[in-house]
Picture 1 (tube, rainbow, N blue to C red):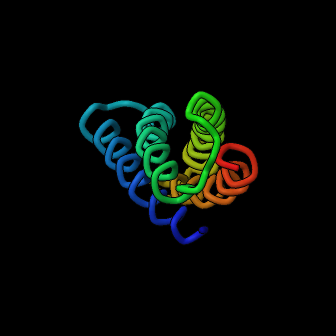
Picture 2 (cartoon, rainbow, N blue to C red; picture 1 turned 45 degrees about the vertical axis):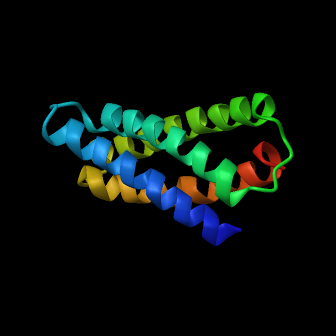
Length: 120
């Protein structure tokens, strides 16, 4: 199941990163705000993919799973933005390096909570 989670997450992350790059490079939006916006867009892609593919055996109705997923996605967006902010502002890292660290960290956190709580 983890490999499916990574595949769907990779697609959602592609949307996230495309949004991040577009907003920072062309929209002149700060990295932390752009990362949060990208995470929100990626979350909608991720829910559809995880519900239909990763956790296709989920018996939770959408009225239960979707609010749980969105709560977790909101917390992930806050963690993601915080890590990008800390890395790029405090650590003086390039924002993409900070985003990679944030992505790896949140991958394991969200897989754990989604498999045990959201889509059980």
